[in-house]
Length: 131
Length: 311
Image 1 (cartoon, helix red, strand yellow):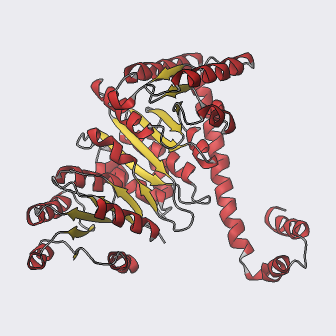
Image 2: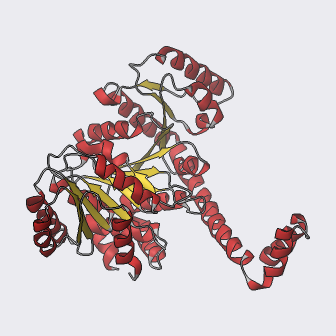
Image 3: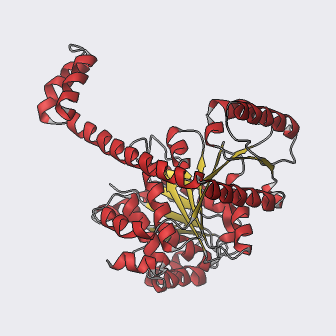
């Protein structure tokens, strides 16, 4: 079975990285190869990193409220760059009512604070199980 | 072959996908590598290794920036250890190269070692070739120099710089890890820290000893990667070594030796996988059970299997 490569990225000006780091570690413990790109990434930087690393998953962490702008933008840019098979998931401070809109924009799932790390892990594994 | 054509034409996604195919040993890996092989040989391959925490990634970032000023295009392969327990890895070197993240002339790829049978040395060699064929002028390979496979990776470089840091007991590390054998250049990073003079003295003694035994005089460069101090000098040393080795014929000799070594590595990795598969077959099930139970000695079992395999 091939390693699943996950890009964990924090777009925008949000400086809270504890969640992203916990996710990164738990993903590593689940057998994924995690490329953590750090704080204050622009959508361009995230998409370029996903391209160079041929990421299977882009996991976006945002606690500053800019998710409705940044998440769909990143999905669009991934498609424009020819990466149409990348699974995009998100987490952070994201109100329930925003989730349908994000899903419509191409974000496969949102994992809000308090979600056990086993959930996004299972989601990712299931997604790639028959690929 | 479409993917290779795109790669040779400078399509970055094609390069990325090709590296993935090769890294995962997919069926088309061999044909891709054969198609790409004739287009290799132009890039200068620089190896950067050293203990964890030596500041290698930050240094690679600065070295690359310096070369970018000269208009060179760059490929970087950052190798990090895979957990032997979970098979996962945090590939975090890219994080330290943030100044390069929007420069499309720099292509950074992170790779996990993927275990002792993972064949990371060969996969790195293939990724180097792909970046070379793609047209990169300079390819930098960064590894943590603690394991055998990481040392093997360094042998795929034209120039290797080993990075040491003051105050980390590196004097002993340098001898233990056989780092002196692969170092073409020694770098003392974080040279603004306490203990730098002691480390310099120890490294100079090692260099003199190495020279007295017939080796060349390995130059030592002081850097403070975070402030860019010494990086221009380091690049000059790298360029100087490369030019010298090309002129003296050493470069050609190394590359021909490397091709032979790579052949041995590839066949050895293949054989290791075959052995695992063979030991698991039905025909040998009873023999292996007896070995596990202790009723047969390992030496006769080894001989029996070797006879099946090689004679």
